[in-house]
Image 1 (cartoon, rainbow, N blue to C red):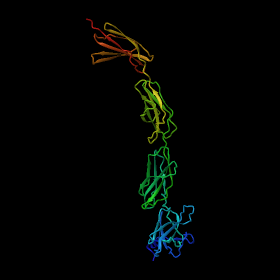
Image 2: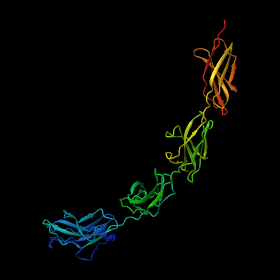
Image 3: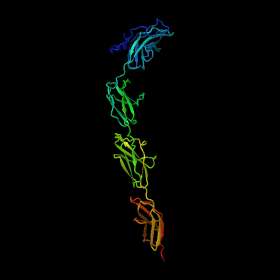
Length: 419
Protein backbone atom coordinates (compact mmCIF):
# COMPACT_ATOMS: atom_id res chain seq x y z
CA UNK A 1 0.00 0.00 0.00
CA UNK A 2 1.33 3.40 -0.92
CA UNK A 3 1.60 6.01 1.77
CA UNK A 4 -0.37 9.19 1.96
CA UNK A 5 2.56 11.12 0.44
CA UNK A 6 2.65 8.86 -2.59
CA UNK A 7 -1.07 9.36 -3.11
CA UNK A 8 -0.46 13.09 -3.06
CA UNK A 9 2.39 12.68 -5.50
CA UNK A 10 0.24 10.72 -7.90
CA UNK A 11 -2.58 13.29 -7.73
CA UNK A 12 -0.23 16.19 -8.42
CA UNK A 13 1.68 14.23 -11.09
CA UNK A 14 4.99 14.69 -9.28
CA UNK A 15 7.19 11.77 -10.23
CA UNK A 16 10.34 10.47 -8.72
CA UNK A 17 13.21 10.73 -11.17
CA UNK A 18 15.66 7.93 -10.58
CA UNK A 19 18.93 7.87 -12.38
CA UNK A 20 19.50 4.74 -14.48
CA UNK A 21 23.19 4.69 -13.83
CA UNK A 22 24.76 2.58 -11.10
CA UNK A 23 27.74 3.33 -8.95
CA UNK A 24 26.83 6.98 -8.48
CA UNK A 25 26.27 6.69 -4.75
CA UNK A 26 29.26 6.69 -2.44
CA UNK A 27 30.31 3.34 -0.91
CA UNK A 28 31.46 3.60 2.68
CA UNK A 29 34.60 1.75 3.64
CA UNK A 30 32.69 -0.89 5.64
CA UNK A 31 29.74 -2.18 3.66
CA UNK A 32 27.37 -4.72 5.14
CA UNK A 33 25.25 -6.09 2.34
CA UNK A 34 22.98 -7.78 4.86
CA UNK A 35 21.76 -4.42 6.17
CA UNK A 36 18.46 -3.38 4.58
CA UNK A 37 18.47 -0.72 1.91
CA UNK A 38 16.17 2.32 1.86
CA UNK A 39 13.15 2.10 -0.42
CA UNK A 40 12.35 5.70 -1.38
CA UNK A 41 8.72 6.40 -2.26
CA UNK A 42 9.26 9.81 -3.79
CA UNK A 43 9.92 13.48 -3.09
CA UNK A 44 8.27 16.89 -3.06
CA UNK A 45 10.10 20.16 -3.65
CA UNK A 46 9.62 23.88 -3.42
CA UNK A 47 12.03 26.73 -4.20
CA UNK A 48 14.51 26.14 -1.40
CA UNK A 49 13.83 22.67 0.01
CA UNK A 50 13.23 19.04 -0.94
CA UNK A 51 11.22 16.51 1.13
CA UNK A 52 11.67 12.72 0.78
CA UNK A 53 9.60 9.77 1.99
CA UNK A 54 10.64 6.12 2.27
CA UNK A 55 9.18 2.87 3.50
CA UNK A 56 9.67 2.08 7.21
CA UNK A 57 12.84 0.23 8.18
CA UNK A 58 12.03 -2.73 10.48
CA UNK A 59 15.48 -4.28 10.98
CA UNK A 60 16.52 -3.78 14.65
CA UNK A 61 20.18 -3.55 13.66
CA UNK A 62 19.64 -0.18 11.93
CA UNK A 63 20.59 2.75 14.15
CA UNK A 64 20.87 5.51 11.53
CA UNK A 65 19.37 6.59 8.25
CA UNK A 66 22.21 8.15 6.20
CA UNK A 67 21.54 10.92 3.66
CA UNK A 68 23.95 11.78 0.83
CA UNK A 69 23.79 14.77 -1.51
CA UNK A 70 25.95 16.56 -4.02
CA UNK A 71 26.87 20.28 -3.96
CA UNK A 72 26.23 21.78 -7.42
CA UNK A 73 28.29 24.86 -6.57
CA UNK A 74 31.43 22.94 -5.55
CA UNK A 75 34.44 22.00 -7.67
CA UNK A 76 33.12 18.40 -7.75
CA UNK A 77 29.41 18.94 -8.40
CA UNK A 78 28.73 15.27 -9.20
CA UNK A 79 30.22 13.86 -6.03
CA UNK A 80 27.78 12.84 -3.28
CA UNK A 81 28.74 13.48 0.32
CA UNK A 82 27.10 12.51 3.56
CA UNK A 83 25.03 15.43 4.82
CA UNK A 84 23.11 13.82 7.66
CA UNK A 85 22.73 10.68 9.76
CA UNK A 86 19.24 10.45 11.26
CA UNK A 87 19.14 8.77 14.64
CA UNK A 88 15.37 8.41 14.60
CA UNK A 89 15.23 5.27 12.49
CA UNK A 90 11.45 5.06 12.79
CA UNK A 91 11.22 8.30 10.79
CA UNK A 92 10.15 7.92 7.18
CA UNK A 93 10.58 11.54 6.04
CA UNK A 94 13.47 13.93 5.54
CA UNK A 95 13.41 17.66 4.68
CA UNK A 96 16.52 19.23 3.17
CA UNK A 97 16.45 23.03 3.51
CA UNK A 98 18.31 26.14 2.33
CA UNK A 99 18.74 24.96 -1.24
CA UNK A 100 19.07 27.08 -4.34
CA UNK A 101 15.90 27.68 -6.38
CA UNK A 102 15.66 26.08 -9.81
CA UNK A 103 18.61 23.75 -9.17
CA UNK A 104 19.08 20.01 -9.76
CA UNK A 105 20.36 18.00 -6.79
CA UNK A 106 21.24 14.32 -6.50
CA UNK A 107 20.51 12.26 -3.37
CA UNK A 108 21.16 8.78 -2.09
CA UNK A 109 20.14 7.01 1.14
CA UNK A 110 21.50 4.11 3.22
CA UNK A 111 21.17 2.46 6.63
CA UNK A 112 23.89 2.15 9.27
CA UNK A 113 24.26 -0.04 12.34
CA UNK A 114 25.88 0.68 15.70
CA UNK A 115 29.28 -0.58 14.45
CA UNK A 116 29.31 2.04 11.66
CA UNK A 117 28.63 -0.64 9.04
CA UNK A 118 26.61 0.81 6.18
CA UNK A 119 24.21 -0.77 3.73
CA UNK A 120 24.42 -0.37 0.00
CA UNK A 121 23.24 3.10 -0.93
CA UNK A 122 20.29 3.65 -3.18
CA UNK A 123 20.75 4.70 -6.74
CA UNK A 124 21.08 8.44 -7.35
CA UNK A 125 17.78 10.24 -7.04
CA UNK A 126 17.46 13.35 -9.13
CA UNK A 127 15.47 16.13 -7.42
CA UNK A 128 14.96 19.64 -8.69
CA UNK A 129 13.90 22.68 -6.66
CA UNK A 130 11.28 24.93 -8.12
CA UNK A 131 12.47 28.06 -9.87
CA UNK A 132 11.88 31.50 -8.44
CA UNK A 133 8.68 33.25 -9.37
CA UNK A 134 9.05 35.39 -12.47
CA UNK A 135 9.74 39.05 -11.79
CA UNK A 136 7.17 41.78 -12.30
CA UNK A 137 6.64 42.28 -16.00
CA UNK A 138 7.16 46.06 -15.93
CA UNK A 139 9.36 48.21 -13.66
CA UNK A 140 10.36 51.78 -14.52
CA UNK A 141 11.10 55.26 -13.15
CA UNK A 142 9.49 58.59 -13.95
CA UNK A 143 11.34 61.60 -15.32
CA UNK A 144 14.28 62.81 -13.21
CA UNK A 145 13.30 64.53 -9.98
CA UNK A 146 15.14 66.68 -7.48
CA UNK A 147 16.37 64.59 -4.54
CA UNK A 148 13.75 61.90 -5.21
CA UNK A 149 12.93 58.94 -7.46
CA UNK A 150 9.42 57.86 -8.44
CA UNK A 151 9.24 54.14 -9.24
CA UNK A 152 6.26 52.41 -10.86
CA UNK A 153 5.56 48.79 -11.80
CA UNK A 154 2.84 46.47 -13.01
CA UNK A 155 1.37 44.36 -10.16
CA UNK A 156 2.56 40.75 -10.13
CA UNK A 157 0.14 38.31 -11.70
CA UNK A 158 0.67 35.59 -9.08
CA UNK A 159 -2.16 35.85 -6.57
CA UNK A 160 0.07 34.52 -3.78
CA UNK A 161 2.16 37.70 -3.81
CA UNK A 162 1.46 39.86 -0.76
CA UNK A 163 4.32 42.38 -0.78
CA UNK A 164 7.32 43.73 -2.63
CA UNK A 165 10.88 44.21 -1.49
CA UNK A 166 12.54 47.29 -3.00
CA UNK A 167 16.34 47.32 -3.11
CA UNK A 168 18.73 50.11 -4.04
CA UNK A 169 22.39 50.70 -4.69
CA UNK A 170 24.21 53.92 -5.47
CA UNK A 171 26.59 54.75 -8.29
CA UNK A 172 26.86 51.13 -9.41
CA UNK A 173 27.98 49.73 -6.08
CA UNK A 174 27.75 45.93 -5.93
CA UNK A 175 25.85 45.61 -2.66
CA UNK A 176 22.07 45.89 -2.84
CA UNK A 177 20.30 47.25 0.23
CA UNK A 178 16.65 46.90 1.15
CA UNK A 179 15.04 50.33 1.44
CA UNK A 180 11.34 49.50 1.66
CA UNK A 181 8.70 46.80 1.94
CA UNK A 182 5.54 47.68 0.02
CA UNK A 183 2.50 45.79 1.28
CA UNK A 184 -0.20 44.56 -1.12
CA UNK A 185 0.09 42.86 -4.47
CA UNK A 186 -1.80 45.66 -6.21
CA UNK A 187 0.47 48.43 -4.95
CA UNK A 188 2.40 49.74 -7.93
CA UNK A 189 4.27 52.88 -6.92
CA UNK A 190 6.95 54.07 -4.53
CA UNK A 191 8.66 57.47 -4.11
CA UNK A 192 12.16 57.35 -2.69
CA UNK A 193 12.96 60.72 -1.12
CA UNK A 194 15.85 62.56 0.55
CA UNK A 195 18.33 61.48 -2.11
CA UNK A 196 21.57 63.21 -2.99
CA UNK A 197 21.78 65.74 -5.80
CA UNK A 198 23.28 64.73 -9.14
CA UNK A 199 23.66 61.09 -8.10
CA UNK A 200 22.96 57.84 -9.95
CA UNK A 201 20.83 55.27 -8.13
CA UNK A 202 19.85 51.77 -9.23
CA UNK A 203 16.70 49.96 -8.10
CA UNK A 204 15.27 46.46 -8.37
CA UNK A 205 12.01 44.94 -7.14
CA UNK A 206 11.34 41.47 -5.71
CA UNK A 207 7.84 40.05 -5.23
CA UNK A 208 7.24 37.96 -2.09
CA UNK A 209 4.43 35.45 -1.53
CA UNK A 210 2.46 34.84 1.65
CA UNK A 211 4.63 31.79 2.36
CA UNK A 212 7.82 33.83 1.88
CA UNK A 213 8.75 32.67 -1.62
CA UNK A 214 10.49 35.31 -3.70
CA UNK A 215 10.45 36.18 -7.33
CA UNK A 216 13.44 36.83 -9.47
CA UNK A 217 14.66 40.41 -9.14
CA UNK A 218 13.15 42.76 -11.67
CA UNK A 219 15.24 44.45 -14.28
CA UNK A 220 17.48 47.16 -12.84
CA UNK A 221 16.10 50.67 -13.17
CA UNK A 222 18.53 53.59 -13.18
CA UNK A 223 17.66 57.02 -11.78
CA UNK A 224 19.80 60.13 -11.98
CA UNK A 225 18.74 62.90 -9.61
CA UNK A 226 18.80 66.46 -10.85
CA UNK A 227 22.02 68.39 -10.18
CA UNK A 228 22.05 71.60 -8.18
CA UNK A 229 21.93 74.80 -10.24
CA UNK A 230 25.35 75.87 -11.47
CA UNK A 231 27.48 78.30 -9.48
CA UNK A 232 26.94 81.91 -10.61
CA UNK A 233 30.48 83.21 -11.00
CA UNK A 234 30.08 86.58 -12.71
CA UNK A 235 28.68 88.77 -9.93
CA UNK A 236 29.43 92.45 -9.26
CA UNK A 237 28.43 95.01 -6.63
CA UNK A 238 28.69 98.80 -6.85
CA UNK A 239 31.18 100.89 -4.93
CA UNK A 240 30.58 104.36 -3.50
CA UNK A 241 27.04 105.06 -4.65
CA UNK A 242 24.88 107.23 -2.47
CA UNK A 243 22.44 105.26 -0.31
CA UNK A 244 22.39 102.13 -2.48
CA UNK A 245 24.45 99.11 -3.47
CA UNK A 246 23.60 97.68 -6.87
CA UNK A 247 24.23 93.98 -7.43
CA UNK A 248 24.33 92.48 -10.93
CA UNK A 249 25.16 89.05 -12.32
CA UNK A 250 25.24 87.18 -15.60
CA UNK A 251 23.01 84.20 -16.34
CA UNK A 252 25.03 80.95 -16.44
CA UNK A 253 24.49 78.42 -19.20
CA UNK A 254 22.17 76.32 -17.06
CA UNK A 255 18.66 75.69 -18.45
CA UNK A 256 17.45 74.41 -15.06
CA UNK A 257 17.74 77.86 -13.43
CA UNK A 258 14.37 79.59 -13.10
CA UNK A 259 15.22 82.29 -10.53
CA UNK A 260 17.74 83.55 -7.99
CA UNK A 261 18.19 84.01 -4.27
CA UNK A 262 20.29 86.93 -3.01
CA UNK A 263 22.15 86.73 0.31
CA UNK A 264 23.96 89.43 2.31
CA UNK A 265 26.49 89.45 5.16
CA UNK A 266 28.36 92.12 7.08
CA UNK A 267 31.68 90.25 6.71
CA UNK A 268 33.01 87.93 4.03
CA UNK A 269 33.19 84.91 6.33
CA UNK A 270 30.11 85.87 8.34
CA UNK A 271 26.54 84.58 8.22
CA UNK A 272 24.79 85.22 4.91
CA UNK A 273 21.11 86.04 5.44
CA UNK A 274 18.52 85.82 2.69
CA UNK A 275 17.98 89.36 1.40
CA UNK A 276 15.67 88.67 -1.54
CA UNK A 277 14.28 85.40 -2.85
CA UNK A 278 12.96 84.16 -6.18
CA UNK A 279 14.32 87.05 -8.19
CA UNK A 280 13.61 86.84 -11.88
CA UNK A 281 15.94 89.63 -13.04
CA UNK A 282 19.73 89.67 -12.84
CA UNK A 283 19.94 92.99 -10.98
CA UNK A 284 18.97 94.16 -7.53
CA UNK A 285 19.30 97.52 -5.76
CA UNK A 286 19.93 97.27 -2.03
CA UNK A 287 18.89 100.48 -0.29
CA UNK A 288 21.30 101.28 2.55
CA UNK A 289 20.68 104.31 4.75
CA UNK A 290 24.02 104.48 6.52
CA UNK A 291 26.83 106.15 4.50
CA UNK A 292 30.09 104.26 4.16
CA UNK A 293 28.48 100.84 4.72
CA UNK A 294 30.13 97.71 3.38
CA UNK A 295 28.21 94.50 2.66
CA UNK A 296 29.11 91.15 1.11
CA UNK A 297 26.73 89.44 -1.32
CA UNK A 298 26.18 85.97 -2.80
CA UNK A 299 23.78 85.00 -5.61
CA UNK A 300 22.56 81.39 -6.04
CA UNK A 301 20.34 79.97 -8.76
CA UNK A 302 16.99 78.27 -8.19
CA UNK A 303 15.44 75.43 -10.20
CA UNK A 304 11.77 74.71 -10.75
CA UNK A 305 11.66 72.64 -7.56
CA UNK A 306 12.76 75.73 -5.58
CA UNK A 307 16.08 74.05 -4.78
CA UNK A 308 18.98 76.47 -4.83
CA UNK A 309 22.64 76.11 -5.68
CA UNK A 310 25.33 75.55 -3.09
CA UNK A 311 25.55 78.73 -0.99
CA UNK A 312 28.93 77.74 0.45
CA UNK A 313 30.48 77.57 -3.02
CA UNK A 314 28.84 80.76 -4.27
CA UNK A 315 31.05 83.72 -5.21
CA UNK A 316 31.18 86.52 -2.62
CA UNK A 317 31.40 90.16 -3.82
CA UNK A 318 31.81 93.38 -1.85
CA UNK A 319 29.61 96.46 -2.22
CA UNK A 320 29.87 99.81 -0.46
CA UNK A 321 27.86 103.00 -0.14
CA UNK A 322 29.23 106.50 -0.48
CA UNK A 323 31.01 107.76 2.64
CA UNK A 324 29.69 110.82 4.45
CA UNK A 325 31.58 114.04 3.64
CA UNK A 326 34.23 115.14 6.08
CA UNK A 327 32.96 117.32 8.92
CA UNK A 328 33.43 121.12 8.83
CA UNK A 329 36.18 122.37 11.13
CA UNK A 330 37.34 125.42 13.05
CA UNK A 331 33.89 126.59 14.15
CA UNK A 332 34.29 129.95 15.92
CA UNK A 333 31.67 132.15 17.67
CA UNK A 334 31.96 135.94 18.06
CA UNK A 335 29.38 137.49 20.40
CA UNK A 336 28.29 141.15 20.39
CA UNK A 337 25.31 142.28 22.45
CA UNK A 338 22.56 139.64 21.82
CA UNK A 339 24.03 138.49 18.52
CA UNK A 340 26.48 135.71 17.67
CA UNK A 341 28.45 135.40 14.46
CA UNK A 342 29.51 131.86 13.59
CA UNK A 343 32.28 131.11 11.11
CA UNK A 344 33.85 127.78 10.06
CA UNK A 345 35.83 126.13 7.34
CA UNK A 346 34.68 123.49 4.84
CA UNK A 347 36.91 120.43 4.73
CA UNK A 348 35.34 118.54 1.79
CA UNK A 349 34.75 119.65 -1.79
CA UNK A 350 31.60 117.51 -1.93
CA UNK A 351 29.79 119.80 0.52
CA UNK A 352 27.25 122.07 -1.19
CA UNK A 353 25.45 123.44 1.88
CA UNK A 354 25.62 123.52 5.66
CA UNK A 355 23.29 122.93 8.56
CA UNK A 356 23.85 124.83 11.79
CA UNK A 357 22.54 123.08 14.85
CA UNK A 358 21.56 125.25 17.78
CA UNK A 359 20.89 123.65 21.15
CA UNK A 360 19.27 125.79 23.85
CA UNK A 361 19.43 124.53 27.40
CA UNK A 362 16.17 125.23 29.23
CA UNK A 363 17.07 123.52 32.48
CA UNK A 364 19.30 120.79 33.80
CA UNK A 365 17.03 118.16 32.31
CA UNK A 366 15.55 119.75 29.19
CA UNK A 367 16.81 121.40 26.04
CA UNK A 368 15.59 122.57 22.65
CA UNK A 369 17.31 121.90 19.35
CA UNK A 370 16.87 123.90 16.14
CA UNK A 371 18.45 123.44 12.70
CA UNK A 372 19.30 126.25 10.26
CA UNK A 373 19.41 124.51 6.87
CA UNK A 374 20.66 125.20 3.36
CA UNK A 375 23.34 127.67 4.38
CA UNK A 376 25.58 128.26 1.36
CA UNK A 377 28.36 130.25 3.03
CA UNK A 378 30.69 129.43 5.89
CA UNK A 379 29.11 132.12 8.03
CA UNK A 380 25.85 132.59 9.93
CA UNK A 381 24.59 135.34 12.27
CA UNK A 382 22.09 134.47 14.97
CA UNK A 383 20.49 137.49 16.68
CA UNK A 384 17.78 135.62 18.54
CA UNK A 385 19.74 135.06 21.74
CA UNK A 386 18.27 135.67 25.17
CA UNK A 387 20.13 136.80 28.23
CA UNK A 388 21.20 134.20 30.78
CA UNK A 389 20.53 131.29 28.40
CA UNK A 390 23.19 128.86 27.29
CA UNK A 391 23.54 127.95 23.61
CA UNK A 392 25.62 125.23 21.97
CA UNK A 393 26.38 125.38 18.22
CA UNK A 394 27.78 122.87 15.74
CA UNK A 395 27.88 122.66 11.93
CA UNK A 396 27.17 119.74 9.55
CA UNK A 397 28.12 119.61 5.89
CA UNK A 398 25.67 118.27 3.27
CA UNK A 399 26.59 116.96 -0.21
CA UNK A 400 24.46 116.96 -3.34
CA UNK A 401 22.96 113.57 -2.39
CA UNK A 402 21.74 114.94 0.94
CA UNK A 403 24.34 112.92 2.85
CA UNK A 404 25.32 114.67 6.04
CA UNK A 405 28.76 114.78 7.56
CA UNK A 406 29.52 114.30 11.21
CA UNK A 407 29.16 117.50 13.33
CA UNK A 408 32.01 119.95 13.61
CA UNK A 409 33.49 121.00 16.88
CA UNK A 410 31.01 122.73 19.21
CA UNK A 411 31.02 126.26 20.63
CA UNK A 412 29.10 127.42 23.69
CA UNK A 413 27.59 130.89 23.91
CA UNK A 414 25.91 132.61 26.87
CA UNK A 415 24.56 136.17 26.92
CA UNK A 416 24.94 137.90 30.26
CA UNK A 417 21.99 139.96 31.55
CA UNK A 418 23.00 143.58 32.02
CA UNK A 419 21.96 145.07 35.36
